[in-house]
Image (cartoon, rainbow, N blue to C red; front, side, top):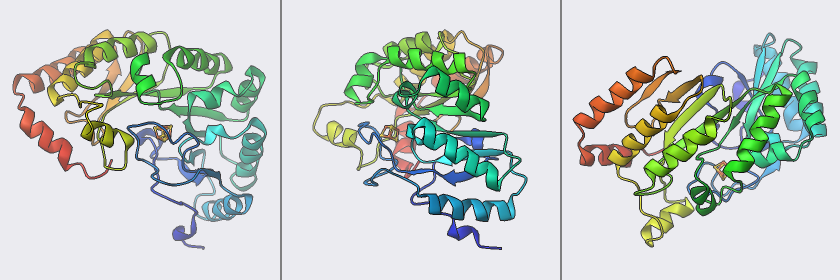
Length: 298
Ligand code: SF4
C-alpha cells in the first residue's frame, strides 16, 4: 500500500471538528478571497484548484486504506468556489474510487453559493453534496465591512435560505471579539438575529485570536482596531446564547474559546448560561489575556 505521506496536502489542513471521521481530500489550495483582515489561516498561499492528477493519485491512496468510506470532506478554504460542472466531475470521480461514499462536504463562502443557480444547488444535493461549513463570522454589517469579509449579513441570509430550499445542510460560525472593544453586545444581538432566521445544523463559536501575519494585527499596532477585552467576549457570548431562538448544536470548545462550552439549543441553554456566569463571577482579565497570548496556533 502507498504511504499516507503521499497525499497532496499543500499546507496545514483545516477541517471542522464535526468532520473528524470524514475522509479528507484536497480539492483546492488556499483561499480564493484572501482578504479577511483577521485571517492568517493560509498565509501567502496562492489559490489554485488541485489538478486532476493530484486528485486521482490521492483517491487511489485513500481507496487503498478506506475503501468503504462514506463521507468525504474536501480540503481547502472554500472548495465550493469550484463551478457546478467541476464539482459534479469531482463527485463522480470520488465515487469512481470510493463507490460507498454517500455525502461530500466542504468549506464554502457565501459568494460561492450565490454563483450557483437553484437547479445546480438541487442537483449537487442529489449527488450527495451536503454539509457546507460557512465562515459567516458575524451578523454585524459594520464588522463584516471593516473585516473585508466580502459579503453582507443580508446576503448570508439570502444564500443560506437557497441552501435550505435545495436541501443542503449547512453549518455557520460566529467569532466573538470580531467587532472590537465595545462592539460585543451589538455583534451578539445582530448575529443572533441573523441566525434566528436560518436553520444551521451547527453553530460553531470561536474567539478572535490574532497572529502577526493577519492584516488586523497591523490595525491593532497602528490604532485602527482595539481588541475586545476577554470579559467582554464572555458577555458577548452570553448575550448571543441567550438571544438564539433556533434549534441547533452550539460548539464553542476550540482552543480559541477561553471557556469551552458545547450543547444543544434550546435544551442546554440554562446550563450554558450558568457555566458562563460562573466563569464571569470568578473572572480575572490578566489570566485570560495570558491564555489568549499563549495560543501559538489555532
Ligand atoms: S476567513 Fe476564510 S474567506 Fe476569509 S481569507 Fe480566511 S480562509 Fe479566506
